[in-house]
Image (cartoon, rainbow, N blue to C red; front, side, top):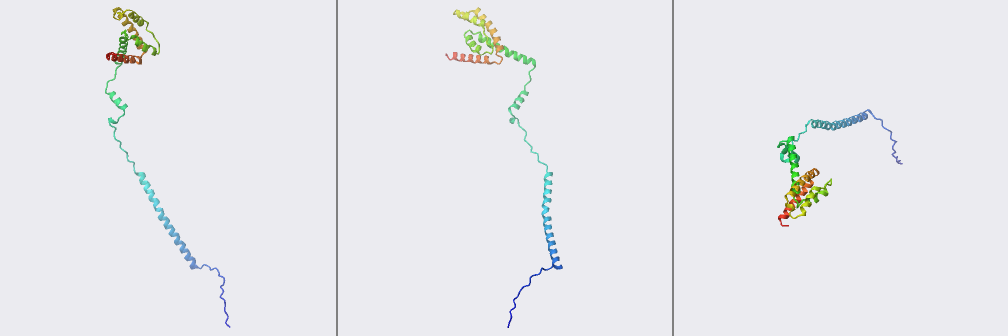
Amino acid sequence: MATTHSTSRRPGTPRRPTSSTAHARHRTTGQRQTRTGGRASVAATPGADEKLVDEKLEDVTPVKVVRAIRTPDSDDHLAAYFRQLAEHELLTPEDERELSQGIEDTEIMTWERALARPEVVRALLALVEPNLEQPIKFPRLQKVLDEMAKTKRGRKDEKLVKKLVAAAKEAAVQLRALDLDRVHIDAVVRELYRAREASLAGL
């Protein structure tokens, strides 16, 4: 009778590492270490190159930008003013005194001639007196005007004309002292020009 034997596997026993297998494992790990070490050395070389590039960049000196010299046309108004001012001679103290005295005399003469005209005195006083910082009246001037208005020929009377001129001089000096900023005299001159143009136009 044939008997059938079941093939049963014995429980596997753990194999002990022999010297050959241990040596093989040691070689594989060593090779792996050398491979990784080689890769690390290769990867480390770009860092050195970057340092060299940085050092070269530090050694490079910046190029200075040369700006174009400003031409006289590109100067501002203040520089042009000082350039033109340097072309003229400065005034001496005596010249300044003479110039200021000439301006004062001209303003006084303007007031005097305007106030010596009997037909415009009242209109000019009405324009100036309310706008003065220190209100002032001119009684002598008003008195001469009243005397001229009494007669038809009063404006042509030589005595009254001389009185009016003397009163106009006195009033002109006072107005010049009260109008150092030339505000009122400019207004008077404008009104005189308007009156002159109106008279020429026949109005």
